[in-house]
Length: 374
Image (cartoon, rainbow, N blue to C red; front, side, top):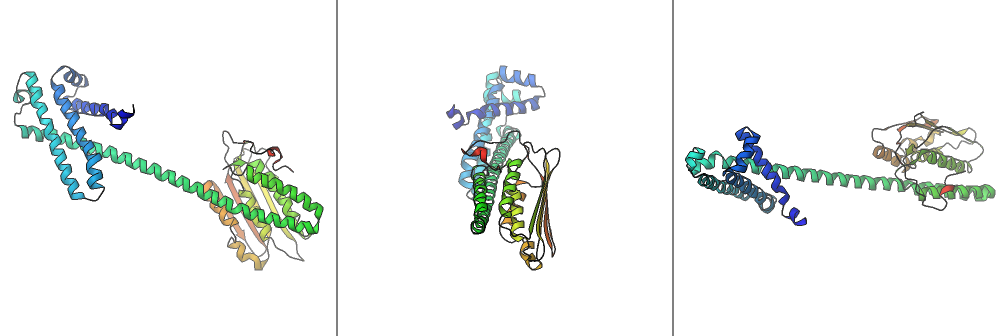
């Protein structure tokens, strides 16, 4: 069947049907039009109308347009296009004479006209122009749809590349902070450093084996968020308080893009105040509505007046990236509000979660069952 498509033979039924419709419009009766074509010499004239305008269409699409129009030679293209229409229309005229001969009559008696150029102007020329217009319209529409699909595919590929870049741009930053925490604990408290190293190992497995997916279970993101908070708390001084409230009784299959929540928490730890004689604090609240579709996330941290500039301008790559990721992954499905003053910096996020029919949880590691567990 490949040769059928190569030579466009599958277009033949279309042209036959198209000209039959024109015949029906002229006669006004589909049954009479079919019987006239099948059982009278009119079939000859009909085949002339099918053949030569169709050939003109393909000559225009596959020769004239690539050779002249696409190269910007508009004058030559118009000249050859007009010649093609004229020749195709002229070649239809003999069909009148042949069909009249098969009737055993004259063109004048059968068609009411015996002057070839009047026949040419009355029917073949308009029919050829209409067929050429139809063919070009179909081709242009097809090319436009193909261009749109290519542009959409390119946009999707660009979007996917940008999302991956943003995600992996954040992850090393998170890892470096965690390594610094463990390094600090080695000198301060070796036992806690050992515990931190175990949690750090779990977070690495989470990142390497689960966070390559576009969406992960919300329950796993929250569990790893808790581990990350515990790890950060170990390197803080005594004049520091972290409060975490999680109200997600039924997460079910609700999913979220990985590291969305953790970025905000990491930013709070990064910019929390370091007052020696005042409380330093971080407040984190995670709420999920009963249907498991709307996530409400709140993060606030104490700040020092002189340290507000970098925070308000979203210093570093963390908050910039997570805002961009939210725009790309959840367009029109999230509300992000960031406020600050001399003593507090807070973030409020409302996010519409995805609840897929099936979530890929393929085990890619022998340690899969240990991921993100305390």
